[in-house]
Structures are given as C-alpha cells and as structure tokens.
Length: 136
Length: 109
Image (cartoon, rainbow over all chains, first blue to last red; front, side, top):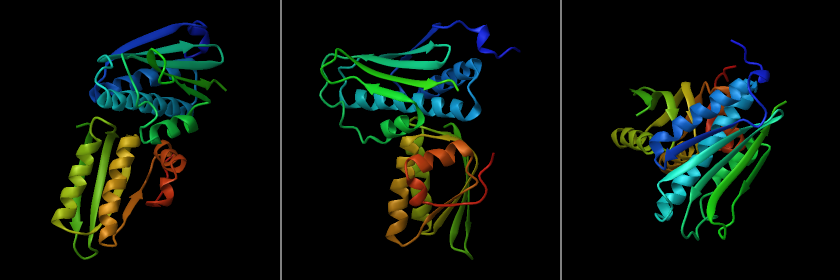
C-alpha cells in the first residue's frame, strides 16, 4: 500500500460529526490515527495527535457537562496540508461562561503534544479548539 | 469497558499485583477508579500495576490514578507502575506525574 503523502491532496478536508458522548472519543482517536498515518507522520507523532484529539474531545464533553445549552453534537475537521495536519473541533453553543474553568490537565497535554493550539474565547458564538502538528 | 483488569493479592509482600490491558479514557476511567478502590477496601496494600498491555490513558485516567494514589497514601502505601509503553511514559512525563508515581521496569520501544 502506498502511504506517501502524494496519495492525498493538499488541503483535503475530512469531517467527522460525533455525539457529545464519552463512548465516541475512541472513534475520534482512531480517525485521527488513520489520517496521520496516511499523511506519513512517524509513530511518535501519530500517538501525539491521537492523544491531543482525545483530550480535545474530552474537554468539549466536560464543557457540555457544565453547560447543557451546548448542542449534543460536535464536529472535527482534519485539514490535510503538505507540511502539517490542522485539526479544528467545533461545538455550537448558546451561552457559555465556564470555558477556562476546567482543571486544565488536558489542555496542558495538548500544548505539550502539538505545535500549536488555540481556544475560542467565551464571547465567540461557538466553542472552537484549533490545533496543528507539523509534518517533519 | 475497553480494558481488561486482572488482579491478585500477594499477602507475603502485602501488595496487589494488577495488570491492565487496553485503553483508558473518559468513557471508562471512573470504572478503573472504582475497581482500584474496591481492591483497597478488601485489603490496604501497595498497588503494583503492570502496564505492558496498556495502549492508551488520557487525562481522566490519570485523574483516576491520582485519586487512588491519595487513598493509598493515607495508609502510607504507594502505586508502582511498570512496563509503560513509550506513548504512555511520555504522557506521565509531560504531566510531571512520573515524579508522583513510582515508575519502574522497562519502557517498551
């Protein structure tokens, strides 16, 4: 099987919609792992991406437990670039005041595992987590 | 449950020998905590956890282990983790929890 990045196209986008439910975090991990593998990331980086995606999902699930006004689905976009994998998690919300009050361990882990992470502010219409890992 | 949990009490050494296989995340981390609490209720002994078959643990799984460690420390016991895979060892390192638990044995490549 050809695993070269040439088999996938720069700026291809893969979208995954999941219920905000702990049972599906493993689905997000598996998908992330499969995409990172196909892009040619090494094993350590694939593990980093898997763990970061898992922590981001967990963060959204915990936010949902704090504020049930968030819709029951969330979306993950994997944006394939020639030199990086960008990942955006989005959950719609109506109001939300608790965004930075989680214990922070998961976000700390994402910061250590990925090259870039940004969190939406509480004034934004959606909850967004954006992160990126460079392809070495 | 997406993990296997095998345990045996070594009365001579006063320790629980535990082996965990599979993945621990927000879906099942509270179950792991409950199982470890149950063992401590049966017998207050050190926990020796063989992680050779542990494929993945997330922040909530680490949180469960920290909760159990607090309980173990109440009777001056400890939690020993062995045979961590590199990805698991990395997670303990970046969270500084490698300084909180006793990490021993080989790290599998």
